[in-house]
Image 1 (cartoon, rainbow, N blue to C red):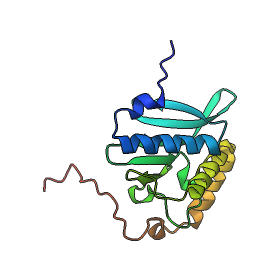
Image 2: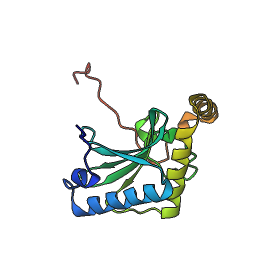
Image 3: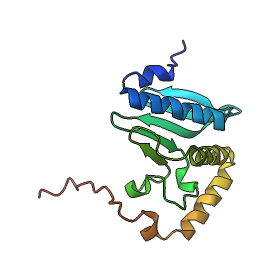
Image 4: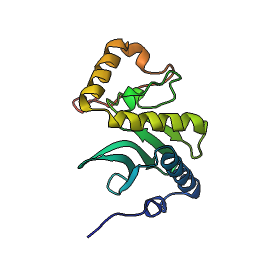
Length: 164
């Protein structure tokens, strides 16, 4: 039995502006990476985009709708060059993902988005050792104080041991 769902089924639960932005992002991904495979992940409430390689599926991007905004995220986002600090995730100290957030419409030039999508797809096709070497090189060249864009405040989770 095939339990795959169409993207429209997932997006139907969201406001019209979020649905429209989701479909625009979907189209952009397919135009930029024509061989991309789309998989709806209903448990995560997102749509994954991958490139098949033999028996493996290598995710490179995802679309994550929410009520007031929608995300376009990248599996190996920390390895993407982002000199303009357009991507989110560093402020949350995410170790792998980086993402754009649109509230609710796309507010970044399509050329820039296509560039990120293409580079994310290219990263996912690199052998594991090459991605690891790139990650180690990036880690050696990053000063943690500058990894988080100015003005962004990290999310602080209260320690459950503190009784206040």
